[in-house]
Length: 121
Length: 369
Image 1 (cartoon, chains in turn yellow, brown):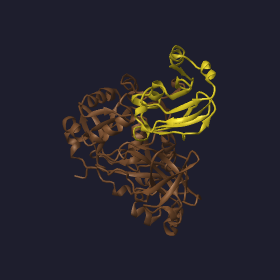
Image 2 (tube, chains in turn cyan, purple; image 1 turned 45 degrees about the horizontal axis):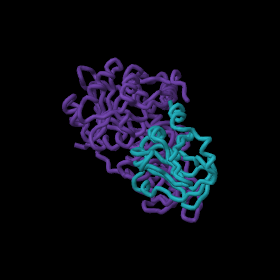
Image 3 (cartoon, rainbow over the protein chains, first blue to last red; image 1 turned 90 degrees about the horizontal axis):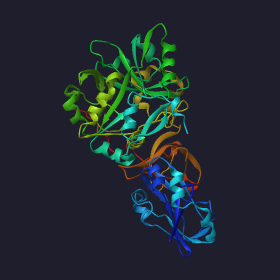
Image 4 (cartoon, rainbow over the protein chains, first blue to last red; image 1 turned 90 degrees about the vertical axis):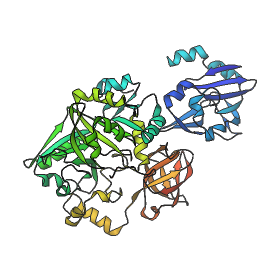
């Protein structure tokens, strides 16, 4: 499984042709306590860079962008009742959505873990 | 990114940084929006125990001399403000709009002198306005060498019982001068959270030491501006510049209780004609509370009736940690003010169901004796 990162602090972990997407622990920390996550409907398609979700903290709303082109094949329903999971476990239980990849080569343009760590340093 | 060199600092700035405060610009000051505990944690702690807020950015002043000159600018009846008392009042413009909301008190034993506390963003304009309009009759002295702290929450009184027991004899909206840690402080039993609490004016040289003393008490946590906002929103309290401004009258803002009955009868305040007409006709928009589910509504969001007609706007909105859901304040046309009215708030282009709700959203816990 490969994990890549975007400049806007989304992570994407690929397994075959399905990728799980969320926001990084760094992003969650910057946001503060998450109180609501607006997720897309299963079946919707997005292009890389499209806003596919919104994450709300007590004070503000932030857009979350699709790291790649794809179709939503699953969303994390747990976030409905437990938005704090994004803060507690941003890269695990706090995942947002699963994308069926349209073009796996798009992953090559994203940062690996070392590059992302340098990005947020 | 704001250039922090241009921002003002309160006497507690270094302490906020030391405590891990996330610093942001607010009203020209570099202020902590939260500490490591986070906005939710700080908010809940304040309602459960006690929170300490640095509000030194607000404007403090003394007024002596002809009180009628000052009274002419505000909605309070100063002849009804006795020794050791405090009133919440509004500074008005000629159209009956609100220039600011403020506290005025008479805490200084044996002296008529008034103590004023105004909002940070408007303090220069407020003080200039008062000076210009009381010139030759009264003297406004801006206080720039005192910090202002707020200790709020159900256990604030337990802290004060140990550190300043005389202050515990006050009830809500009383004020006086006391000794705390060997220092002369002005304390009022009031605040901006809906909880019991104390607002404490301290000489700036002693502010850090006293803040640390308060934070050392088991009950007390440092609280930032983020939780200050969520606390006051749940308490149904207005934030000047958002929930009311120069284009909103006290009638529209549902603050007519801050206009003394005697002043209303005399009509001797700015914009009296406008306000009298609004009270008579009962047709102007009014500020109301709203609860909704899911995504919070934020300032600027349109409020619509169930047919999709826009009939109002949100002026404050966010998530209420105690209510455990989104809450908002806004203005709607008069026909929609009744508690229980079902409306929609347009959030990101979608209509989200909302209900007009009585404020405060969380019961007040003011200490009345």
